[in-house]
Length: 105
Image 1 (cartoon, one colour):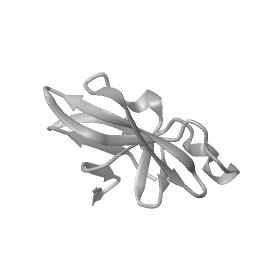
Image 2: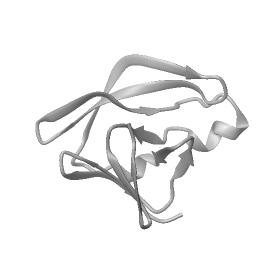
Image 3: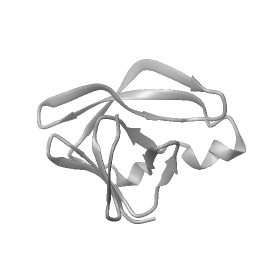
């Protein structure tokens, strides 16, 4: 699978060799989130028919903030989604997975 890295404002905010890759999104385990990023819960929720309800975070690094830029599933709806529990996905960042650069929006 290769290492996945999330970068925001020129700073690594998450890095993991073990993560979930679902529907074009990298879901990082909570332990892979670096101390360089501040995650602030928001009031935004979305619902996926098979993953369940996602909760969102604003993220902040070095004084730069991005609203509702990360999400996670605290209680996945199906057995298929259970591996995503509490894993965090980011949008609008560059991810590195092995030798492939992926742009997530």
